[in-house]
Amino acid sequence: MPNAFVHVELNTTDPAKAKEFYGQLFAWTLEDVPMGPDTYTVIKVGQGTGGGIMKHPMPGAPSAWLAYVAVDDVKASTEKAKGLGANVLRDTTEVPGVGWFSILMDPTGAVFALWQQKM
Image (cartoon, rainbow, N blue to C red; front, side, top):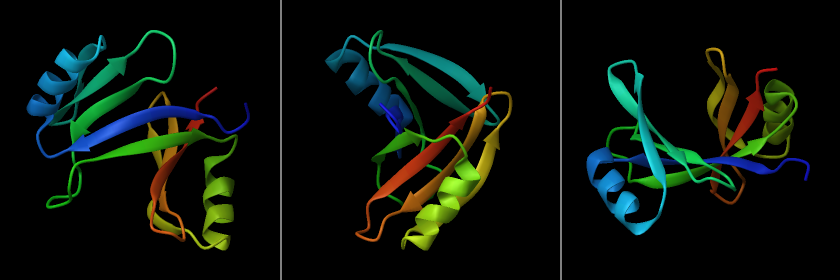
């Protein structure tokens, strides 16, 4: 499927509590990976879309799930979305060695991310 959802990420005010909850609720494998001064928890689900859990990068913002959609060119897709009325919350950012993402708010207020895998 073109432009599939490829990753879902929980930005949470309490990563430890979230990991305890989801770890007991679902049969997910949770793997902590150092990410600067914090930790990123990779969610491995077997088949299907995996994701991650991290401390919310925006202090004071509520915990929320963020869905990532695959694109061939994150810069071009970000500009296209902007032209269609999206607000850019985080412009194209590189995840070293992995790929690039941007975070957008659609014209209705829903937040989503674009993802371009490094080849």
